[in-house]
Length: 151
Image (cartoon, rainbow, N blue to C red; front, side, top):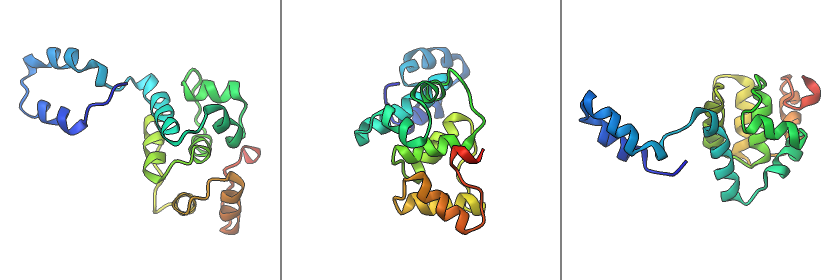
């Protein structure tokens, strides 16, 4: 997916008539998110910016490369939100990047009013990306770990 500022697209849409929609979609198709691929491209873009390899992310997230690849490309879909969070931690995603990844995958963003999510947010904001350190923070608060062995 190529990049074009959303604000620019919003400006175009603001005064558009319904009969202009076909040409807008055709002219801007390369900037549109493909729901199936948006998560993969987003992960890949962020990891490329951080110079982190996907295979390292799978390893640090505690999943096999073959399974992790199927999840990231959405060949297989998981309902395990913690797995997506672990992939984000392994990719050193900040809070905004993690929320965007969760949203693109179709999951709820980290929510400050949820005690477990609040712990994860604090970990991310303090650059604690090791899943076992995050587990320690969670267990100290009497909350469920994010590691795979707890699921």
